[in-house]
Image (cartoon, rainbow, N blue to C red; front, side):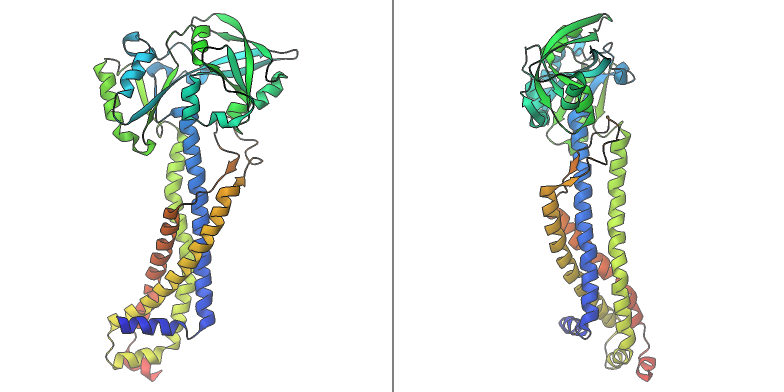
Length: 418
């Protein structure tokens, strides 16, 4: 094997330009895989994170009948706790389960404000300020004022919604809404914070209100429209589900409540999960395109060295050893090219992970319900570099089998006659 390794390395340097071209092409392909995979992982994980933070939690607890009414922001089917004892006790019992980190109650309701020219509709989020800040990064989006505080009759409003309302931090607004009893009511609240998140759902349509105030205004004592459950690891939420289901069954409310995992019931999330698998095939395809150059290089070497191959066979080199010789040449090309590609791709990904890629213009016409950051930050991970390097080496080596098999199958007599 040592002899074959030295011979393979020596053969590659016979035509340095051709070898260099092969290495450069492989390096470019691997670099593209590193950058593309970093971008895709960054985009998908970012959308997963936003979906979990502002929509589903790791597990969402809602009433069975509420699922069909939640787009209407119905208050008729709130989470009331076990045996209608309130969500506070329900949260305590859920947090006693293993792997449960936190519970986040929310009340989502429709509201409106009448201005001089028109009626502006909004969506209110009644939240526990401390839990909401810890679970999401909402406080990072404050551009003026502060986040709401529990017990106060105040709101934090998206920056685009403030523009529509022709209001600013410090102003007071009278909002109208429908209570859980179906009656219309109005309340005056103070604007204490302005949020600029880059998400249409939050910036153009929503405002935050302390949970206790929302419960009081909407006549939902110790209730919420949804209860989000945060686990220690959202990727392992399937392990937590049996314990949650057993808890609800033991309380006799399994048929009344629905437990929805973050990755269920949302078509966009499911498409992204499928897309991640499809992209793995695309990475292989990119490397395969580069390997066409490797195949061509090795086939030309086989053609140029027919007599030499015949002589080696005549001197006792077996077909299997000739096969290994050319596979080793492909392996060397793959290792060198993949290593250079990983270095170049790693540098490019690291830079992009800091500066980001601005997609705000492309997202301007997107639906408000689609949660996507206006700036994507590709992920720079060592695992991505290792994955790309191994993929480049394996695919290059496998494709080298084609010309290697051709060399191994040469008849020594015919090769020497040429």
